[in-house]
Every structure is written in C-alpha cells, then in structure tokens.
Figure 1: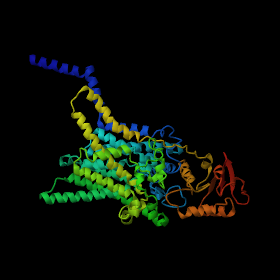
Figure 2: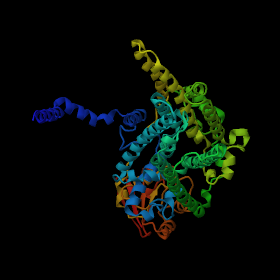
Figure 3: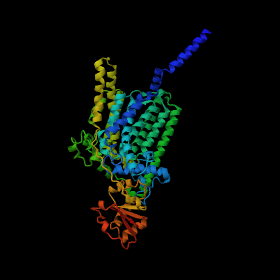
Figure 4: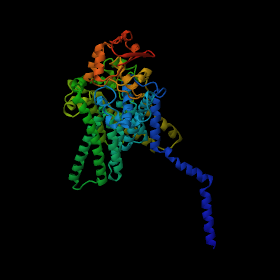
Length: 594
C-alpha cells in the first residue's frame, strides 16, 4: 500500500513538473530551436545579404528594374509568359505571343523556364516587374547558399562557408551582368554539386567516406542540376559537360580502385539507383531543351552562331583584374583599364581582389590535402585559359574555340568570359580552406578573455573585405508603363516604332493579357521581322495596310512621342482616308483598326 501511494505521488509530481512554467518555457524553446540551426541561419543570412547588396532593387519593385531597359524587360516577360502558358495552354509554351506569326519564339533566347512557377503568381505589368525584382534578389541569395553548402560539404568551416558564399554570390564581375538574370542565376550549380558530393559521401578534406553516403541527396543534386539547365544553356551547358566529365572520372577511379585492391569498393544499390534515376532526368531535360533550340535553328538558319562572335567577345588578360563600372569600390579606379576592353560588359571579369589574395594564400595553407589544392589551382588556371577565348595563343585553339568546334552546343556560347562562374567558384573553395584553418586555430587557442573578443573580430576581416567588394552602384531605371490604348487594340497587333530595344519594352507591356504582337527582339532576328519593318515604313498607305492584313495583323498601335528619327516620325499627320481603316487617339497614342 505504501509503495502504491509513493508511485501515485511520483506520478503527480511528474505531471505537475511537466505543466510548470519552466517546463512550458523549455518546450517552447525546443519548438523554436530550428531558428538557431546552421542552415536556417545560412538561408536567412543569404536573404538579408541579397536584400542589402542588391539595394535599391526592392525600393520600387513595381516600377524599376536593375541595370537597364533591355534584357531585364525581356526576362520579366519571359518569366511571365512561361507561367501564363503553363497555366492556360502548356502545348503552346514554345509559341509565344511575340514575333507573330513565327513559331518557337519563346526559344529565341535563354528562356528562364525554371522560374515558370513564379510566373504563375500574379498577372499583369506590375506583377511581372515585382516578380522579376524578387527573382533578382533571390538569385543572389541562392548563389550564397549554394556556395556556402558546397564548401561546407567539401570540408570548410562556417566562417569559410560565409566568406565563400559572399565572394561567389556578390563578386564584382557579376555587377556587369545586373541586366542578365539568366547569368546571375547560377546558384543551382554550386547547390547541385554540394548535394551530389553529400550524397556520395565525398569531400575534399576527407575524401570518400562510404558510411556517409546519402542516396536521397544524390537524387536531389541531379534534380537541382536539371532545374539549373532549364534556366538557360548559357551557363547550364558547361555544367552538363562538367557533370559528364565528373561521372567518367569517378567511374574510372572506381574501376582503378577495384582493380588495385582486388575487391569492389562500397557503393550501394540504392545510391546507384538514385544516380541512374537522377541522371536520366537530368539527361532527358537537357536533351528535350536542346531539341527545341535545334528546331529554332532549323527554322531560322541565321540563328546559328559563328565563331566570329566568340572572337569578338574574347577578353584580354587584363579583363580578369578589371572591375565593371557598377562596382562601388573599384568602378572609378578601374575606368582606365576598362577603356582597353572592346566590350566591358563581357570583359570586366574581376572576381575580387580580396578573393584572389585569400585563394592564393589558400594554395599553401588550407584544411584540404595538398593534392586537392593543386587540383583546385589547376582548375583555376584551366578556366582562366578557357575564359580568354580567342585571345589565348591568338586563336583560342587549343582552348575555348576547340570546344566550340567539337562539343555539341558549345559554339552557341559566344562569351568565353562567363567561364568566370567556375573560376570564381574554385577561388572561393580555396579561400574557404584558408579561412577555416585560421578559424580552427582560434577555436583551439587558450580561452583567454581578450582572445574571445579579438578572434571573432579578426575573422570578420576577410568576410568584410569580400562583402565590401560586392557593393553596387547599379542604375535602376523606371520602366515605361503600357499605354491604355494597347488594351483597346484587337490582336494581333503591331506597335510602332518597331525595331530596337523598344521592342523589349513592348514585349513586357503584353503581360497585360498577352495579346499577340509582331514585335520582338532576341539574339537573332527572324526574316519576317526585317520584311515587316520594310513593308510598314510608310504606314499608313495602301501597300503597308495590304501587307499587314496579309499576315493577319488586325491593329496598329503608334506612339508618336517615340517616333522621332524613325520612319514613322510624323505618323499622326499621315492621312487614312480611302484605306479602309479607322484611327482613334487615346492619351496621345494612335490606334489603327485594320
């Protein structure tokens, strides 16, 4: 009886303890413990850094874009079109509402198709701008998280990961591409490599550890790599060939180890299945997208890039230590050096002075084994030589142009300097190894009061330096709003003046309902574009009206205020009598109903 009473009291005491205020506080703390998790902090830190270092992108996200009114307006339209098409008519995805009456017009440029889910959120002109600016910020955040995850998997510490993440995601050379979301969207490269390395239990610091294999991570790595390819072949195709080479090297190494040891190294059926399934998805996505682009070339032979483009965009060696004009820290200081570059937006390729210094020291002092540091150094050298393009040896062969002649699709990569994605990533890995050595030595040092205060401040120095080099002074122009008259015009529509960068703004205007328009601008021009501009140079007259009716155009929207210096200057004074068309004016914009 006494024992039962004691048990009852104990049970009651336990229950009371569980419901005490202290216990409830501990329970709440455990529920929110995830907020202090390393990866939560990494993601939140990446978002905060991206918001700050891309500022003022999010100051007026519904009316401005970073860079200029060229490619950003095109890419805002691309994301919007992808989401709209997949929701309304997936079979018509590749046949966009622009370049009417051409087909496969969505594939005239890198499509950013992987951002289609974002394109499904919201509709209209302002939504397209807000969506683009959010993606611009998130692309930088993902690049930080991807580089952080990669160097952490390769064996670097948290401080090394932070330095590598900032140095890669906000490198000065990226500022030259403020208007190229397809180029800035490279976070999937580093993230997929991190996942694949984790899935296979491999790191630079510790080598292959079979007990750390994670098939799910390997599969996720292949899927992220496939998603990266959907953002465009411009930076996706080098990833395809890198992964292909990595698979061949890994398979060769596995076979060599098997032969040398006389027994099969551990790998695992589940990991093999994950690699086969993920590789199949990755290969299928790459192949299907490639077939679409090949179809575009079949229909438009002029779309095929010649090596003359590669020669034109090949940077001199000085470009690799020259910052773009949008760099707050180095822009003015490097103005004279940029004058030596024939095309600074593609040739100002500074990865960061601090990063170069840290990576150089990381070749000699690092947590990575010497053989891996040598491999990383050779990788940096190799990617720099490829990035020189035709500048290397006077003709780039052997080099970048060799790949253009022999690797399928490489000839379309006309800008060798974009190999800086890989150069700066390798430099970031080297820098992380150095920073990790210092951070670990500080952690092992005697815990004196002054050391606990000074050590974090010293560790902040390399992080502060690479962050400072990422500060921008990128312009954020206001995007012209679509005229109300465009909504009153029956599609298909021709907007005048036609041709040039203005067509990119017109494409963005069509996000209000996506009416079909003959206007459009891409990396090449379909034959019908020049024919249409020539035929309507004297619009409105009998010949131009007949031509437009013949190709199916029902309305013409003319912007007299933008027609100065074009064939349509003074269009408002041209008569329409006897042409069988009507004209109305709305807020200074003319609408011709054919």
